[in-house]
Amino acid sequence: MSALIFRGNDPIQALSVQDRGLMYGDGLFETLRASGGELPWWPAHWRRLKGGAERLGLPLPDEGVIHAAARELLDVRPQVLKIILTRGESGRGYLPVAGPSTCILSVHPLPPPMAEPLRLHWCTTPVAQQPVLAGMKHLNRLENVLARRECADAGFAEGLMCDGDGQVICATAGNVFLYFDGHWHTPDLARCGIAGIAREKLLAMLEDVRVAPVTRDQVENADAVFLCNAVRGIMEVRYPGSVPVIGHAALAALQQRFLAAHPFFADE
Amino acid sequence: MSALIFRGNDPIQALSVQDRGLMYGDGLFETLRASGGELPWWPAHWRRLKGGAERLGLPLPDEGVIHAAARELLDVRPQVLKIILTRGESGRGYLPVAGPSTCILSVHPLPPPMAEPLRLHWCTTPVAQQPVLAGMKHLNRLENVLARRECADAGFAEGLMCDGDGQVICATAGNVFLYFDGHWHTPDLARCGIAGIAREKLLAMLEDVRVAPVTRDQVENADAVFLCNAVRGIMEVRYPGSVPVIGHAALAALQQRFLAAHPFFADE
Image 1 (cartoon, rainbow over the protein chains, first blue to last red):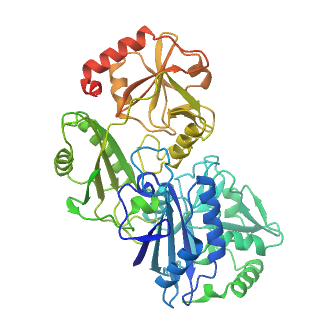
Image 2 (cartoon, each protein chain N blue to C red):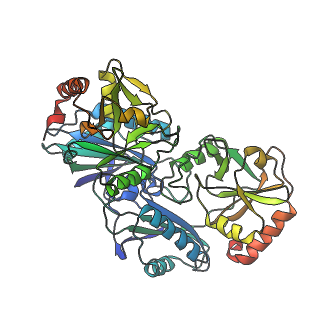
């Protein structure tokens, strides 16, 4: 793993133990798929990072500086670039003090594909409803860690998480779409969950998608279900319930359109 | 600020940017008041840290090693020791991988006393209900950061936070007790909030305290209200509503008992 750390726009050598990212999870992150040394979805990721930074009141470093540094870290293999943006250093205490942010870039190998056919665990760890943080890819991710551990303990590679009212919100590391009644559906994320970039690209691509509350019953009885994230693209779920779903024409067509629009997801 | 970092029981020089404390807030912290180079509440703090580590599945370093290192960092002035315990380093991905934890010790000056008379802001940032994390002093503290900023923006040094149902849970950096109908009351923290060590000591000291849901009305109309934490002890709130409360005999008696039992809170 190679990494770079910035304080504002200036490279620094080491992370302070008083960084608020560590102390409070006071920051955001992005995980981008790289292809041939390029970051095709950079604009969408940077836009989300900027939006989150505005909501949290975090200063953003210069986009050109960070983008250039990120590209220098990459080689031509399919890779993952992770950006962490924190509120920077401060003394003890929750009150944010104005100062430069910390930005950490690191490059990682592309993870292996998900097990096929993908089966999902129903996580008992709920997603807490918190409208003030909903949608953001912030650093407070203990729920995801606990839910992911729960999946592994139960012998699954992924799982779905519900909010305290039992509405389906997301996978531990991705968004979920399901097809029934002739339409695509994906959970509304007004109260919790991360508004993923792959989800955003798919919402732009799908003409008649319904963004609405989703129940566990709807998932288990859907004609087709997939997960998506910006690293793996579309991941078909073959067992949303106990019976496998047969590859649905709507999903096959969507996968084709998605790969045509974003061919770097076919890299290996 | 002086600091020490441990990987398991071994001192290390620098924090990895792949530490899960930074990446996901995957860890816990404790904030202890030190007096004359000693840590009078160490056993209670370590017990809570251990309890949180068990719930999260974090390995705990050796208590003797960490306690000895902490005492070496302190001098005789009243100070604050902060302990951060994280799940240590791992690659990208939420799944915890077994390995040594990271433990960071740092020493800070005692903060100045709260403004007198203490007025509280009613924070609009809610505390999310998350029973899986309730009670723990974990590193996912964005809510507290946003609530604290909100207090500052409104001209207050502290504020009270409610959950999504409007129940009063806590201050941004402390627990709350109120006196009415001849009894002390403090919010139930089964669904959210941090079970503070000062709160724990007070619960053990008070004979007839009621741990139950608390409403904003009850706070604003209470005979006496105070906040507490392990750094500042008891902080009397003079304006829970728009009219100041007169020092109540029950609070005066409690303050006396608290200081008699824990005289290091009188250090200056």
